[in-house]
Length: 109
Image (spheres, one colour):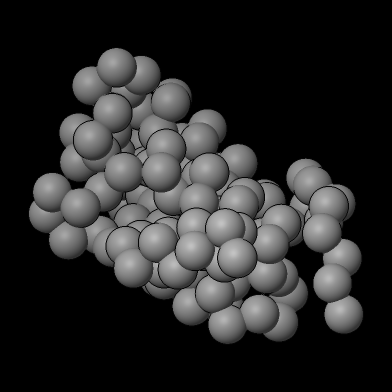
């Protein structure tokens, strides 16, 4: 019950690229928590993962951004002032790799 309550709390605040809502750190560890709890077919994971992809993938810099290609802006993130573009890019790559970096600890049927 405690884990499900945590999952409900996370999906009540889904990743969102709206102004003042961007928190890459929260998205990274929320992704890991829900991946462990509920993936690949659970309702919490599916909702979170879709919102996370919709927030992160389109905001990645492209070729038209020159030297910033492949990175994420840090000035929009809650913690970006601390780590800059390198932090923003690293944590977002880790978030998008959550499927590949970790084996699921909770294997429920």
